[in-house]
Every structure is written in C-alpha cells, then in structure tokens.
Length: 199
Image (cartoon, rainbow, N blue to C red; front, top):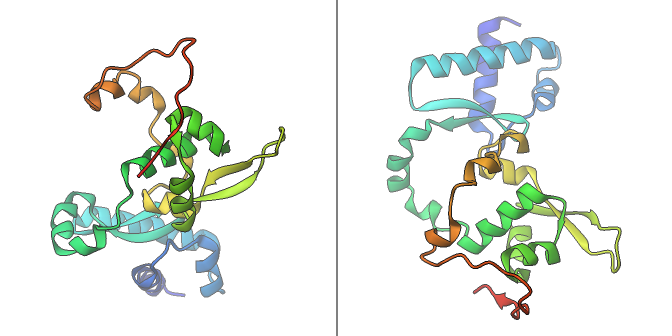
C-alpha cells in the first residue's frame, strides 16, 4: 500500500475513534500491512502534527493512539463545551483515586486508614465510572477485596501507563494541612475517632 494512502487511513481511523486505537486493532484493519510499517507511519504522523503546531496532536494513551486537542487550547474548549465538564470528579473521589493509583492493589480498609474517612460511596462511584476495578482478594483474614486502576483511568488522565504518574517525591515539600487551611496533627497513641462519611 502506498505510504500516503496508509497515512490517510490511519489518520481517519484515529479521527473517528472515541477510544485510543491499539496497534493490534490497526493491524486487524490493515491486514496486508506489516505492523512495523504501521508503527513507523504513526510516528511520522505524530511528528507531522507536532511540526504543524496546530490545534491537534496524536498522543499515546492507555497503550493505544488517539487524536487529541493541543492542551494549551483547553481554556477555549472548556468555554465551548462547559456542559461536558460538569461531571468532574469530586475532591474525595480524586483523593481516593490517587491512593489507589499509587498504592494498588489496595483494600478499602487500607484506603480508609490513609484517608481517615469511610469510602464506600466513593469506591462505588469510581467502580461505576470504570476508573477502578476489583483485581483480586488479599490473602489475609476475611480475604478483603483488592482494588486497582483501569485503562479508563489512564485514558481519563491522558496517561500511557502508570509509570507516567508524577513521582511522589515531587509532593514531599507540600504541607497538605496548610493547603486545607488547617494545622497538620501528629497522631500518637491517641484513640481513633469514628470514621466520618464523605458527603
């Protein structure tokens, strides 16, 4: 197949797909084309979009490829599509999701120990939105459920893999208590308070 035609086909597939397109999916569509040539064409197409410095990019996300808008233009897109952004994650959801992303596989009890609040509702919301999934059971008394993130999580945050998460060391100097307008408390031999529930 002619190189220009292959490039146009891949570009069209990425344009119409709502999800990242995997190399295996492209190979299934382009049966007679070598997977090495598909990779090479994707790389060339990605470079072309970057050199044009236009409003679109081709990104590697969740193990696949997708066409996306240039991040610096998000302020104008948000103004146009405000309604699409009304279903943002709440602060409790983001906190819980962060813990799961960095500590997975992790149980609900372990999350609650870190957050200090009940997370039943938050866990259900994250499961419904397919940002987390049940990945097994911990080999301990009661065999509690273990949670981990999904490909949908990677897609939601524009990541190709978990290795692209920011390093926790970047946050070492942040005083989370001060960010919340509260003093951080050191907990030593004090009785635990009953768990609060997120609302």
